Length: 445
Image (tube, rainbow, N blue to C red; front, side, top):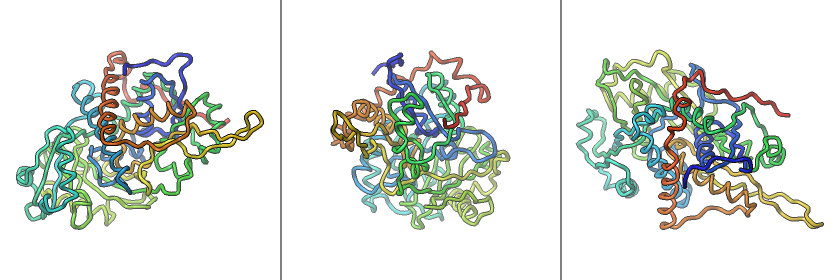
């Protein structure tokens, strides 16, 4: 699909939410020819204060089930596999252009996963590994010698490993880039906090923002805005240490032990953030809403001790003096990731008769810790659902068989990669963080 620019008659989509899911959804919709307005209570910031969850995220691409994902059935897991492979191929294409990779903060790096047992002994892990190998990810290698090669502590108890190339994203830089990009493409941004169930104010919002469809990409706030009691916070935290080669050999490979592979159900997460910062983690604490952890909290002490026990060279790692510690609330959901039309319908009188009218709200939330990994895949499905909503078709769940799955991956990947060349926006994409257009403050009318 070629890039389509909106015209005077093009529909307008109101995206609610300014995190990675909202911004990438806006990008895809803009390139499909829609006008896009984004409303968010806050945007990416670059101070020592609390940053967006999308910025705090580890942003290491993972094949599902990822450590912080939630799947209660095979259909949800199948969708996530499709979404993640669409995103993998697009992030890979972005990183392949040196200039674009630098602007967006996206690099393809080796990512290795370690296990306290032979992978063949665990049918689920073996099946996942074989799927990864067949999926098309680059640089796959199943090799226990990675333990010695990466200087992993032989007494830590890991005995097997595999690695592949994966997108690793400097989230601060990437969120900045996405903000510039979508405004360059024509998106309008407004700062506003919307309260209450979107369904009950759908017509008012559509009229006030001159929109035709609403996309709900509000993450944890969907508990209120979609009246979804299954949403819950999954608290996480990361240490940021200086990765300049002075205190330990510079680390350019991600290393992880996921909770489902750990005998103690605890995570080891060591990921290069950018050229000189290394992330150490992690934790996943369900239904912990307060952001009250400190560097000296016992759970953070244990987290750091796990990383040092796994990779002893980190014992003398220096904390980043400017931003040493990050914590946030991943937007999890008990009933799987929700990418679907609003199922509720409203009654309307037409020709003296009462009829049901489908809602024009499309939801995309509940991604847990996988927002960056699933981003473009979910956005492609949202674009399809927006088209359906504009036709006022009855909202149905999206089901795909294996053949449709592969066709969908190819179609969405091809569409997005065809839209990647950004040479029409060079000046706008290279302006500084303090220079890009600011969202408007907008109060309820």
